[in-house]
Image (cartoon, rainbow, N blue to C red):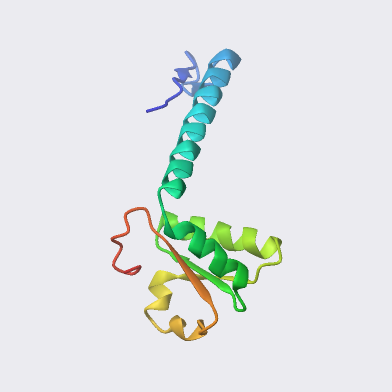
Length: 126
């Protein structure tokens, strides 16, 4: 767990910002942890034989990329859609809870669906 200890101002009883050196140390630690996480993702991609097939399917795609998720995964899915759209790849975000209440009709046969889930066990994603 990373935490920056905030001292309390002796008179006004509000947090005092940490010293710049402490802020830099925490920033460095966060970046190192993010680098470790990216290495883990790279390892997971390398260990997933279907990844290359998914990329090939995306390159042949005639429809849109529809990305869905729930909770924090929905935020990540939404960001992915924004990134895809900025590259000229037609993409649509669909919240999984909305999908099960009628929005699935927006998905066409030529679309490619990406479901983002941390656990893979989210009922709305299954």
